[in-house]
Image (cartoon, rainbow, N blue to C red; front, side, top):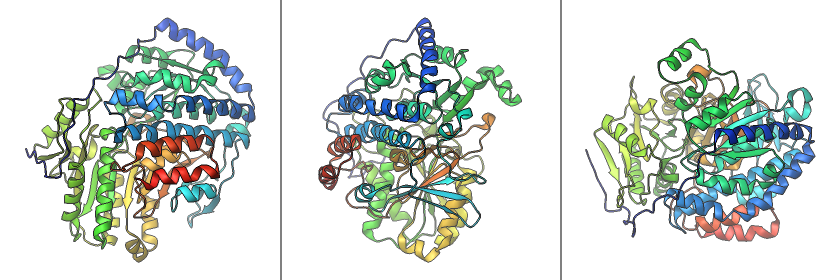
Length: 577
């Protein structure tokens, strides 16, 4: 085992990570039943509201979210062990309050347009598939997100229609949805609730994940107008509470962000009986279930003649894709896919390792993290550990060595839910051969279809012409980030978030259905977000951003009420990064 800690390794923390705050008592099953009864009445009231009336309820949540927008990240920091003012603190604005605020505003605007918000552009590809440009929407977007675009590709055979339940009353039946909240990003439970309310027309009972259940009360305060009107309830507890809610006769649908194993346990049960049901394709419950269940997310690095500055930038970029949120992101970089004949191949791997080594290690706040780390490093005894681990609750950033493109390769088929990534070589040299090999590798060899990142410099893309576009078209992933981490797909909200469509329930992989989808497109297939190869100032999702707390706070407030006169404050915070 190689426990290499280069000279650039992180400075040890001055104090141990504090323990997480006390959890929230489990909701009794009797109280769960009472909540469902209240939601049953709220369901009918929500169904009776017009799009404009729903928009007013969402607008009422903007000031209540703003009122807790500093308390929310502070509690998340307590849960994860981040110090006030730290990089992690900024991430809890950028990945917590900011996307929720943006989601509220975009959905309110979409409902004010009766579910038919304007699309900046639509077009058809040569094969007839429709693509809807969803970002940028206006001049403010173009200023604050210069060079960034988002296109939502529509499933073949469908046109880019929007807001089905607002066009078709027969589709607006409503119901009660159980939302099983994620434990990693605090915005996920809140945004999943908003999607179910607005796009599916269902009222929600949100059961918080025990990992971050302390955030339940602050989410309830943020969404107080929804709770007071009887459209949302929040419950707490573990498996027993979750099963009671998902099995309940009043429950119409279930949405889970978690693992494929948790999805299968809900749908088929556990043990030998569950395995038999799954094998026979006979679910134990008859309810609609949508899900987002992770991915072994690849980073496809197209070989090119990169400058030293470009190589350094992309090394920071890839390191950030893993280190963000301590590696507990379903779209975190897990496989960096390189051409073994690329002249810069060794330099790039060394640079990524050096950037990771310079990242302060963090408390591995997921209860399963250490066991996961031990399982993967046991499979790959030759691994490189990076960074200084100064607290027993932390884990090193870890590179699994010797991962290869071969049948049965463990790291290609299992998601390492902690700070682990691997480098994989493809036996090619040129950019053209790389694309021809890397796309089928990503599609057929890597588990899951949630997210993939493609890094290609502008000179190489110009040389290849339409071949890059063809590669993007061929990738079977719900979120594709071209020269940007798919964390931007998640945070924009104009994109959809979810697996590539087509997974049957008995082979669920990354899940079924989508969330976010700020412009309410009816049949999304995937979202492609593009960014410049090198961006200045430092992008907000880089974990070496020097001012992300101030930036996250400023952009959260900006999204609550975008005004031209607020732009200089946001730009100033960004420039200090």
